Length: 267
Ligand SMILES: C[S@@+](CC[C@H](N)C(=O)[O-])C[C@H]1O[C@@H](n2cnc3c(N)ncnc32)[C@H](O)[C@@H]1O
Image (tube, rainbow, N blue to C red; front, side, top):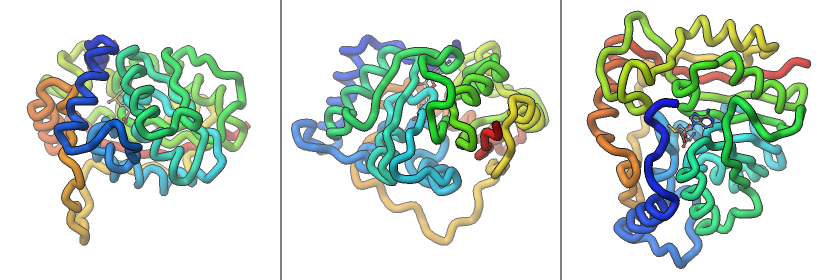
Protein backbone atom coordinates (compact mmCIF):
# COMPACT_ATOMS: atom_id res chain seq x y z
CA UNK A 1 0.00 0.00 0.00
CA UNK A 2 1.48 3.28 -1.05
CA UNK A 3 1.67 6.55 0.79
CA UNK A 4 -1.67 7.83 -0.47
CA UNK A 5 -3.02 6.23 2.67
CA UNK A 6 -4.04 9.04 5.00
CA UNK A 7 -2.17 9.14 8.24
CA UNK A 8 -4.62 10.92 10.49
CA UNK A 9 -6.93 9.64 13.17
CA UNK A 10 -10.64 9.88 12.41
CA UNK A 11 -10.88 12.81 14.83
CA UNK A 12 -7.96 14.60 13.15
CA UNK A 13 -9.35 14.36 9.64
CA UNK A 14 -12.80 15.44 10.79
CA UNK A 15 -11.25 18.46 12.54
CA UNK A 16 -9.22 19.29 9.42
CA UNK A 17 -12.30 19.12 7.22
CA UNK A 18 -14.39 21.28 9.56
CA UNK A 19 -11.59 23.85 9.86
CA UNK A 20 -11.16 23.97 6.07
CA UNK A 21 -14.90 24.47 5.59
CA UNK A 22 -15.07 27.31 8.13
CA UNK A 23 -11.97 28.99 6.67
CA UNK A 24 -13.62 28.87 3.25
CA UNK A 25 -16.67 30.64 4.69
CA UNK A 26 -18.95 27.57 4.72
CA UNK A 27 -21.13 26.82 7.71
CA UNK A 28 -21.04 23.09 8.58
CA UNK A 29 -24.26 23.58 10.56
CA UNK A 30 -26.09 24.37 7.32
CA UNK A 31 -26.79 21.82 4.56
CA UNK A 32 -23.84 21.82 2.10
CA UNK A 33 -23.96 20.76 -1.55
CA UNK A 34 -21.58 18.28 -3.21
CA UNK A 35 -20.71 20.92 -5.80
CA UNK A 36 -19.48 23.50 -3.30
CA UNK A 37 -17.26 20.86 -1.67
CA UNK A 38 -15.73 19.81 -4.99
CA UNK A 39 -12.29 21.38 -4.51
CA UNK A 40 -11.92 19.54 -1.19
CA UNK A 41 -13.26 16.07 -1.87
CA UNK A 42 -12.59 15.27 -5.57
CA UNK A 43 -9.15 13.87 -4.87
CA UNK A 44 -7.90 13.15 -8.38
CA UNK A 45 -6.45 14.62 -11.56
CA UNK A 46 -8.74 17.32 -12.93
CA UNK A 47 -10.94 17.59 -9.83
CA UNK A 48 -14.69 18.13 -10.11
CA UNK A 49 -14.55 18.88 -13.83
CA UNK A 50 -12.90 15.52 -14.52
CA UNK A 51 -15.68 13.80 -12.57
CA UNK A 52 -18.30 15.51 -14.75
CA UNK A 53 -16.42 14.34 -17.85
CA UNK A 54 -16.28 10.75 -16.58
CA UNK A 55 -20.00 10.90 -15.74
CA UNK A 56 -20.77 11.97 -19.30
CA UNK A 57 -18.67 9.13 -20.73
CA UNK A 58 -19.97 6.50 -18.33
CA UNK A 59 -23.65 6.93 -19.27
CA UNK A 60 -24.55 6.36 -15.61
CA UNK A 61 -28.25 7.11 -15.16
CA UNK A 62 -30.68 8.03 -12.39
CA UNK A 63 -31.53 5.00 -10.29
CA UNK A 64 -28.34 3.11 -11.11
CA UNK A 65 -26.60 1.34 -8.25
CA UNK A 66 -22.97 2.47 -8.46
CA UNK A 67 -19.81 1.28 -6.71
CA UNK A 68 -17.10 3.91 -6.08
CA UNK A 69 -13.79 2.05 -5.69
CA UNK A 70 -11.15 3.77 -3.51
CA UNK A 71 -13.68 6.51 -2.83
CA UNK A 72 -11.48 8.70 -0.59
CA UNK A 73 -13.73 11.36 0.98
CA UNK A 74 -16.51 10.25 -1.42
CA UNK A 75 -16.92 13.57 -3.23
CA UNK A 76 -17.60 11.87 -6.59
CA UNK A 77 -20.01 9.46 -4.88
CA UNK A 78 -22.05 12.37 -3.51
CA UNK A 79 -22.01 14.05 -6.93
CA UNK A 80 -23.46 10.85 -8.46
CA UNK A 81 -26.05 10.57 -5.69
CA UNK A 82 -27.40 14.06 -6.44
CA UNK A 83 -27.04 14.16 -10.23
CA UNK A 84 -28.03 11.95 -11.99
CA UNK A 85 -29.40 10.46 -8.75
CA UNK A 86 -27.78 7.11 -7.91
CA UNK A 87 -27.44 4.90 -4.88
CA UNK A 88 -23.70 4.68 -4.31
CA UNK A 89 -21.66 2.22 -2.27
CA UNK A 90 -18.07 3.27 -1.55
CA UNK A 91 -15.21 0.93 -0.75
CA UNK A 92 -12.23 2.68 0.82
CA UNK A 93 -9.13 1.20 2.45
CA UNK A 94 -8.20 4.05 4.73
CA UNK A 95 -10.21 4.32 7.98
CA UNK A 96 -9.68 8.05 8.30
CA UNK A 97 -10.90 8.77 4.76
CA UNK A 98 -13.95 6.64 5.62
CA UNK A 99 -14.55 8.84 8.67
CA UNK A 100 -14.16 11.99 6.56
CA UNK A 101 -16.53 10.59 3.92
CA UNK A 102 -19.18 9.80 6.55
CA UNK A 103 -18.85 13.29 8.02
CA UNK A 104 -19.35 14.90 4.60
CA UNK A 105 -22.29 12.58 3.88
CA UNK A 106 -23.94 13.92 7.06
CA UNK A 107 -23.17 17.56 6.22
CA UNK A 108 -24.72 17.15 2.76
CA UNK A 109 -27.71 15.13 4.00
CA UNK A 110 -26.77 12.19 1.75
CA UNK A 111 -26.27 9.46 4.33
CA UNK A 112 -29.16 7.45 2.91
CA UNK A 113 -27.81 7.60 -0.69
CA UNK A 114 -24.06 7.04 -0.10
CA UNK A 115 -22.82 4.08 1.96
CA UNK A 116 -19.19 3.85 3.03
CA UNK A 117 -17.50 0.47 3.54
CA UNK A 118 -13.98 0.25 4.93
CA UNK A 119 -12.16 -2.46 3.01
CA UNK A 120 -10.01 -3.36 0.03
CA UNK A 121 -10.89 -3.15 -3.63
CA UNK A 122 -9.13 -6.52 -3.90
CA UNK A 123 -11.56 -8.28 -1.55
CA UNK A 124 -14.91 -6.56 -1.78
CA UNK A 125 -17.79 -7.31 0.59
CA UNK A 126 -20.38 -7.28 -2.23
CA UNK A 127 -22.37 -10.06 -3.90
CA UNK A 128 -21.68 -11.04 -7.51
CA UNK A 129 -23.66 -9.08 -10.16
CA UNK A 130 -24.65 -6.27 -7.77
CA UNK A 131 -23.88 -2.98 -9.54
CA UNK A 132 -25.02 -1.22 -12.72
CA UNK A 133 -21.72 0.67 -12.81
CA UNK A 134 -18.34 0.77 -11.12
CA UNK A 135 -16.44 4.06 -10.83
CA UNK A 136 -12.75 4.50 -10.05
CA UNK A 137 -10.61 7.66 -10.11
CA UNK A 138 -6.86 7.73 -9.41
CA UNK A 139 -6.77 4.49 -7.42
CA UNK A 140 -5.18 1.74 -9.55
CA UNK A 141 -1.79 3.45 -9.35
CA UNK A 142 -1.75 2.42 -5.66
CA UNK A 143 -2.63 -1.21 -6.35
CA UNK A 144 0.04 -3.64 -7.51
CA UNK A 145 -2.26 -6.58 -8.31
CA UNK A 146 -4.24 -5.06 -11.17
CA UNK A 147 -5.52 -8.43 -12.36
CA UNK A 148 -7.19 -9.11 -9.01
CA UNK A 149 -8.54 -5.54 -8.96
CA UNK A 150 -10.16 -5.92 -12.39
CA UNK A 151 -11.48 -9.42 -11.55
CA UNK A 152 -13.19 -8.06 -8.42
CA UNK A 153 -14.74 -5.17 -10.37
CA UNK A 154 -15.96 -7.64 -13.01
CA UNK A 155 -17.41 -9.96 -10.38
CA UNK A 156 -19.53 -7.32 -8.63
CA UNK A 157 -20.85 -5.70 -11.83
CA UNK A 158 -24.12 -6.89 -13.34
CA UNK A 159 -23.83 -8.35 -16.87
CA UNK A 160 -23.77 -5.35 -19.20
CA UNK A 161 -22.58 -3.09 -16.36
CA UNK A 162 -19.92 -0.49 -17.05
CA UNK A 163 -16.56 0.17 -15.39
CA UNK A 164 -15.67 3.87 -15.73
CA UNK A 165 -12.23 4.97 -14.61
CA UNK A 166 -9.50 7.56 -14.87
CA UNK A 167 -5.99 6.60 -13.99
CA UNK A 168 -2.30 7.20 -14.43
CA UNK A 169 -0.45 4.72 -16.64
CA UNK A 170 3.24 4.10 -17.22
CA UNK A 171 4.91 6.12 -20.00
CA UNK A 172 7.89 5.73 -22.31
CA UNK A 173 10.49 5.98 -19.55
CA UNK A 174 10.55 5.24 -15.84
CA UNK A 175 9.08 7.89 -13.51
CA UNK A 176 11.94 9.76 -11.88
CA UNK A 177 10.46 12.78 -10.05
CA UNK A 178 9.37 12.06 -6.50
CA UNK A 179 7.32 12.53 -4.45
CA UNK A 180 4.36 11.97 -6.78
CA UNK A 181 0.81 12.43 -5.47
CA UNK A 182 0.37 8.65 -5.12
CA UNK A 183 3.96 7.60 -4.36
CA UNK A 184 6.67 9.03 -2.13
CA UNK A 185 9.19 6.50 -3.44
CA UNK A 186 9.60 4.42 -6.62
CA UNK A 187 8.67 1.33 -4.58
CA UNK A 188 5.17 2.86 -4.00
CA UNK A 189 4.53 3.38 -7.71
CA UNK A 190 2.42 0.70 -9.42
CA UNK A 191 1.83 2.16 -12.88
CA UNK A 192 1.52 -0.20 -15.85
CA UNK A 193 1.69 0.73 -19.53
CA UNK A 194 -1.57 1.47 -21.37
CA UNK A 195 -1.30 -1.71 -23.49
CA UNK A 196 -0.95 -3.90 -20.40
CA UNK A 197 -3.94 -2.19 -18.73
CA UNK A 198 -6.13 -2.78 -21.79
CA UNK A 199 -4.98 -6.35 -22.19
CA UNK A 200 -5.61 -7.21 -18.50
CA UNK A 201 -9.11 -5.73 -18.71
CA UNK A 202 -9.77 -7.78 -21.86
CA UNK A 203 -8.52 -10.98 -20.21
CA UNK A 204 -11.05 -10.43 -17.39
CA UNK A 205 -13.85 -10.27 -19.98
CA UNK A 206 -14.27 -6.50 -20.31
CA UNK A 207 -14.99 -4.94 -23.69
CA UNK A 208 -13.83 -1.40 -24.34
CA UNK A 209 -16.54 1.17 -25.06
CA UNK A 210 -14.27 4.17 -24.73
CA UNK A 211 -10.59 4.72 -24.07
CA UNK A 212 -8.48 7.85 -24.34
CA UNK A 213 -4.99 8.93 -23.53
CA UNK A 214 -5.85 12.36 -22.12
CA UNK A 215 -2.27 13.28 -21.18
CA UNK A 216 -2.16 16.31 -23.41
CA UNK A 217 -4.76 18.85 -22.28
CA UNK A 218 -7.16 19.74 -25.06
CA UNK A 219 -7.41 23.47 -25.87
CA UNK A 220 -10.50 24.69 -24.10
CA UNK A 221 -12.72 27.51 -25.36
CA UNK A 222 -14.18 28.10 -21.93
CA UNK A 223 -11.78 29.25 -19.25
CA UNK A 224 -12.00 27.52 -15.88
CA UNK A 225 -14.52 29.42 -13.73
CA UNK A 226 -13.08 30.83 -10.50
CA UNK A 227 -13.83 28.54 -7.55
CA UNK A 228 -16.87 29.62 -5.56
CA UNK A 229 -15.18 28.76 -2.27
CA UNK A 230 -11.50 28.48 -1.41
CA UNK A 231 -11.17 24.83 -0.54
CA UNK A 232 -8.17 22.67 -1.34
CA UNK A 233 -6.90 19.11 -1.02
CA UNK A 234 -4.06 20.60 1.03
CA UNK A 235 -6.42 20.41 4.04
CA UNK A 236 -5.35 16.76 4.25
CA UNK A 237 -2.60 16.14 1.62
CA UNK A 238 0.98 17.04 2.59
CA UNK A 239 3.35 18.69 0.09
CA UNK A 240 0.55 19.02 -2.45
CA UNK A 241 2.31 21.67 -4.56
CA UNK A 242 5.52 19.67 -4.97
CA UNK A 243 3.65 16.42 -5.72
CA UNK A 244 1.40 18.11 -8.30
CA UNK A 245 4.40 19.82 -9.96
CA UNK A 246 6.22 16.48 -10.19
CA UNK A 247 3.17 14.82 -11.73
CA UNK A 248 2.75 17.58 -14.32
CA UNK A 249 6.45 17.39 -15.22
CA UNK A 250 6.30 13.59 -15.46
CA UNK A 251 3.33 13.75 -17.85
CA UNK A 252 5.00 16.48 -19.95
CA UNK A 253 8.16 14.39 -20.29
CA UNK A 254 6.22 11.23 -21.17
CA UNK A 255 7.16 9.32 -18.01
CA UNK A 256 3.51 8.87 -17.08
CA UNK A 257 0.24 9.01 -18.99
CA UNK A 258 -3.25 10.05 -17.89
CA UNK A 259 -6.03 7.85 -19.25
CA UNK A 260 -9.81 7.48 -19.11
CA UNK A 261 -11.82 4.41 -19.98
CA UNK A 262 -15.28 2.92 -19.97
CA UNK A 263 -15.39 -0.88 -20.24
CA UNK A 264 -18.46 -3.14 -20.28
CA UNK A 265 -18.97 -6.50 -18.61
CA UNK A 266 -20.02 -8.90 -21.29
CA UNK A 267 -21.25 -12.02 -19.48
C1 LIG B 1 -6.11 9.69 -4.92
S1 LIG B 1 -7.25 9.01 -3.81
C2 LIG B 1 -8.74 9.08 -4.81
C3 LIG B 1 -9.99 9.17 -3.99
C4 LIG B 1 -11.29 9.25 -4.78
N1 LIG B 1 -11.34 8.19 -5.78
C5 LIG B 1 -11.42 10.58 -5.47
O1 LIG B 1 -11.16 10.62 -6.67
O2 LIG B 1 -11.77 11.56 -4.81
C6 LIG B 1 -6.90 7.25 -3.87
C7 LIG B 1 -7.75 6.48 -2.88
O3 LIG B 1 -7.64 5.08 -3.13
C8 LIG B 1 -7.67 4.43 -1.88
N2 LIG B 1 -7.14 3.09 -2.07
C9 LIG B 1 -5.87 2.74 -2.41
N3 LIG B 1 -5.75 1.39 -2.48
C10 LIG B 1 -6.97 0.88 -2.18
C11 LIG B 1 -7.49 -0.44 -2.08
N4 LIG B 1 -6.72 -1.51 -2.29
N5 LIG B 1 -8.78 -0.60 -1.75
C12 LIG B 1 -9.58 0.47 -1.51
N6 LIG B 1 -9.14 1.76 -1.58
C13 LIG B 1 -7.85 1.96 -1.91
C14 LIG B 1 -6.83 5.33 -1.01
O4 LIG B 1 -6.97 5.07 0.36
C15 LIG B 1 -7.33 6.70 -1.44
O5 LIG B 1 -8.43 7.10 -0.70
